[in-house]
Image 1 (spheres, one colour):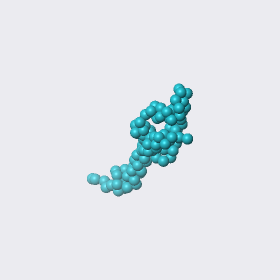
Image 2 (image 1 turned 90 degrees about the vertical axis):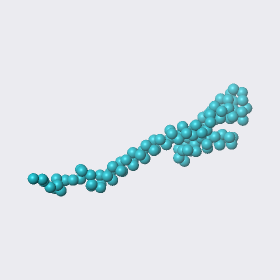
Image 3 (image 1 turned 180 degrees about the horizontal axis):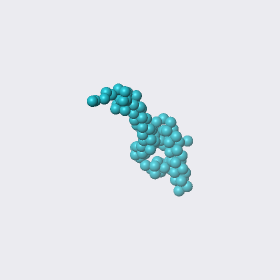
Image 4 (image 1 turned 135 degrees about the horizontal axis):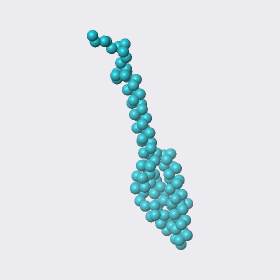
Length: 111
């Protein structure tokens, strides 16, 4: 059974992520913490102390949350910006008010 302190750490570390990414990352972080706990058990610690050691090794949740958010949402933000740019360019092209929309038939020759 995962201790409440570990569950709280996992929630805090993934709170800035979208729900789907948060579930995946939480499972991976849990696996890493569990392995650290097992390593601490091999060093002779009892289970509660081993979980505490695993959390200490993991470091504070806030820097982890910021790093994970940067890693897992920056690509999404860039995709949204690219899509917005493409849609904006398409809307501009559809307006027909830019110089490329002026055809020779619509211009008058100057003598």
